Structures are given as C-alpha cells and as structure tokens.
Image (cartoon, rainbow, N blue to C red; front, side):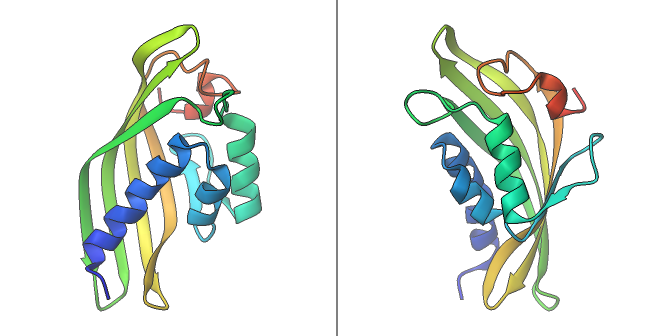
Length: 152
C-alpha cells in the first residue's frame, strides 16, 4: 500500500487539478463520500449529485472549458492514525486567475481543513471545510457573489 501521507497529499492536490481543468464531475467523484462546507456559512453538503449541483451552479466555466484558474495548495500538514485508518490535514490555498478582461491576479486565498478515512485499502475524503481569508475579484470565477465564500 502506498505511503498514507503521500496518498492523502495526492487527494488534496487532485482537487486543485480537477477544478483548474474544469472537471466538475471529477471533483464530485473525489468528494462523493465527503461532507463539504464553508466555515460560517452552512453545516455542509453531502452526496455526489448535490456536490456536483453546487459546483455547477457556482463555478464559472469559460469558453476553453476551464475556470481559467490555478489553485496553489501549500503548507500541507497531515496527521495519520494508521491504526484507526483516519487522518486529518490542514493546508492553505491561493487561487490565481487570468480571464478575458482580467489580467493575472490572485482572486482568493484561504485554508482547507480535511478529514480522511482508509476504506478498502484506499484513502478518501470524508470532510472538506473551507475558510476564506482574502477575497479579490471573483466575478469571473463564481456565478454567485463573493458571499458564497463566507468568512471574508
């Protein structure tokens, strides 16, 4: 079995890759077994179809099929309990965007708090919480206003 920390880090980084490629189905699959939520906004949302509906209704996809973003995930700290088959992680995210009419800039930054479980010899997300610390011009990234990000 691959190293737990590396497997979990790959899950965390896969999220960024899916969103930046505009692969909302892939993101929904990745988070299908998780509860996701924005701190200070809601208790959380669970279920692949509900997560896909949320993503589809909030993330603006441009003509090239992507949101024209780069999610940079840093400061990843992972704690694994191998006996229990659980893990937690904390990380920072910074989202860059260059969209029509918008030069390259940072549009949002914040933190993720994640929980994972090992199921049938694979790690999976069971919770992802977002905290938004800084918000710039998200008008070309989100279909809703910046209030959806909470905490900013």
